Image (cartoon, rainbow, N blue to C red; front, side, top):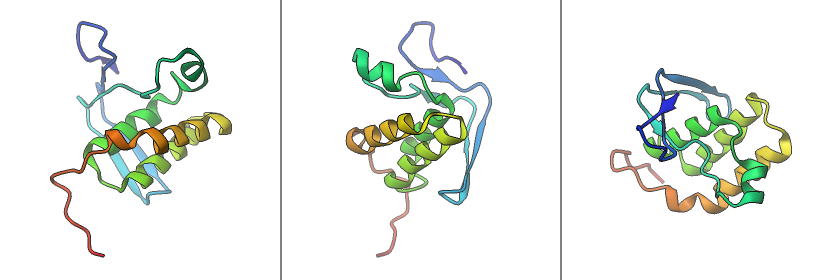
Length: 121
């Protein structure tokens, strides 16, 4: 990853694709080179950032991609974050903290995809 701009705006750009095989979602996700991410969107409050910030960057990139492209429902995207965090060695307590953080605070970042086909039901 590289900084996405010449200034520190908190964005990073993938320089090569990131592929993640999710057993939970039953599919493989490929985040393309050039995708921009802010990694884990953790509030910069000292205690919160100390507990959850700067961890599991690969899982955060996949999660940002899922929130951008919507190939799965939001609940699945959040579960993939937890799963990918486990794969990358994040301690259980931190995985759950991150998971509940996105479940409770991520709704405002989940916007309906205009290209997503309607589902039956």
